[in-house]
Each structure stands twice: as structure tokens, then as C-alpha cells.
Image 1 (cartoon, rainbow, N blue to C red):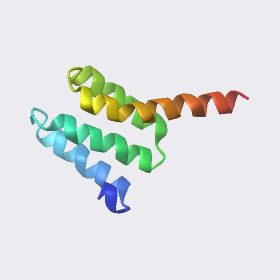
Image 2 (cartoon, rainbow, N blue to C red; image 1 turned 180 degrees about the vertical axis):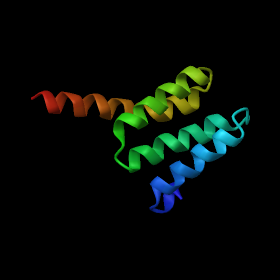
Image 3 (cartoon, rainbow, N blue to C red; image 1 turned 45 degrees about the vertical axis):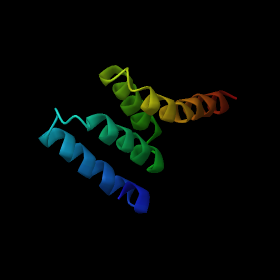
Length: 84
């Protein structure tokens, strides 16, 4: 859903799946998709918080963290623009 133009519905479904099975070994992947869904929904603050949660939840998932760096970098850029 996230990649088919319905990111809000996709985030809702991912939250539900994580709530139903919080110990799922693929939870980091679901969280990564949730970050993207939040980003596509223009929920930038929530996306950043979800990205930070991934880093805390699974710091060894370097490939996932590297994928989130552009999101974090763009959020820093947005903050800089708002200050000027």
C-alpha cells in the first residue's frame, strides 16, 4: 500500500501487524517501510522518530540505517530552511 499511493493505509496496516506480532524477526523491515510510509505521507517528524526507533531497536541493521540516512539528512535541511 505504501508504494501504491496509499501510504497512510500502509502505515496503519504495519502498525497493526507490529502490534499483533511484536517479536516478529522481520519487524525491522516493517519498521523501515513504516518510515517510508510516514515520509511519503509528509509526516516528517513521525518518520524521524520511527527511524530513530529502528536504530535503537536494531543497531546492527546497517543496511536499513544507511537507507534512512537521506531521510534524516533531509529533515536537517528542512530545519535549516525554516530558520532562515
